[in-house]
Image (tube, rainbow, N blue to C red; front, side, top):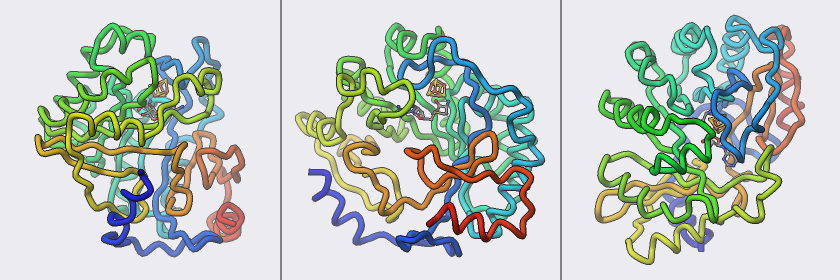
Length: 311
Ligand code: SAM
Ligand code: SF4
């Protein structure tokens, strides 16, 4: 079902990027996801163990190292950077990193966050080029949110979503849909999107990290989420760029929803993203542990390294 939906969407796409990076499959690589830290103050059960061991800060790239690597990669055509984690806003030097990235020749900077510290960063972020903010919210019910994240911060995160939107940022909500956990809230999220003019992206549970254990129990494919919505709503397909990771729709009531089918319909053949870990490893794929170290590597060696990563 998803397959047939994708066809008209791709026909309209355009690749605006002028990246000089292409992998062995001819994919233009122009996006980079940067992990600022592996640490997090939440314990979403599918992502973090209850008592995780985080890396010592000496193992993490310093802000200077991180900016040097991003600057070098921008020279090779990276023009979109998304800051992620762990929880990126926990980094003490979060602001100098965002300021540094804002000085690079990038056309888009985004942040993916659990929202906990977001409100206090908004005044700062307004002065930067980081304007695309994705906030994770797996439930609209306080008790359930607390069970999923093992925190008591539903209200704080919910208000962060609304305030970030009200202050003019481009906001998306990321919701991992899990069978038997929050799949009864799919229509609540569709309504939330229409009521607040905030795009909601439904993520399939990926079989990585802590989600391995109950994956087959909790996994819900995007096509099933779509089917569920279509029982009471019309989904109107929207065009997206060829390398978009989501299938996007609107509803007549004004909701904007996207589906990220990383498991059931991996978008490998269109992926245009590299990943930089908090310790300085460059990876071509989230599903792969393989990567090449960039920490301390002189720029003249990047060409060879990029060839290895992209082969
Ligand atoms: N801490 C930030 C947050 O939660 O937004 C940024 C990092 S978090 C790893 C980025 C996104 O990955 C979140 O939206 C989270 O829900 C999602 N995620 C984590 N583990 C996942 C999994 N096993 N399957 C699908 N999405 C996952
Ligand atoms: Fe933390 Fe984000 Fe993982 Fe939740 S999904 S535990 S907020 S890193």
